[in-house]
Image (cartoon, rainbow, N blue to C red):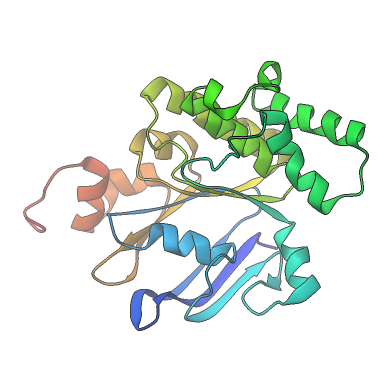
Length: 251
């Protein structure tokens, strides 16, 4: 079974349609990247996938369960199967890193405080931040904040992680460290990653497969291995994106 199935999805707000009739699947254990130009609906699509926004039409199935139609306890059960890291990390500034990671455990488990603290430390260790468990978010770097946000996102041992622009604002070395963290979690824990990104170095480093969205057609114009698309796509829009040059066809 695929981790996620998207069927005839229409994304937008009110009468404004950003994307229409999207159909694709994401395999279990895959590092899957959503990319495209500015304003094409990447982040909006991501938020539709994990239920923050309701699609205008269509269905999103997570482990075979339809999050777009689920309500009450059924919806809650689906939402515990995934974690989310927003673009800026969204850590709570008044809490230590350990307290940030422990927060979801307090809400969704019946574990004792010592048990939660032990698990929170394990999650921080997985992203290389155990020595910083008692630090506040403003006491660590931007890259460390992103890794702490991932530690919080895996607090409940989700099968799927949604990441919105994880490398945004990071220098190349810090971004590469974050890429390696993602690869390690995918390999060692079998987590399925769904990532919005426009950072080509990161895309080449981590993505098993991508879809590329297009603002004008409101659709998917390419999908597959990003390296293959870079080298052999017949679509000038795809070549323009991956090679960062204008082509005669799109000039």
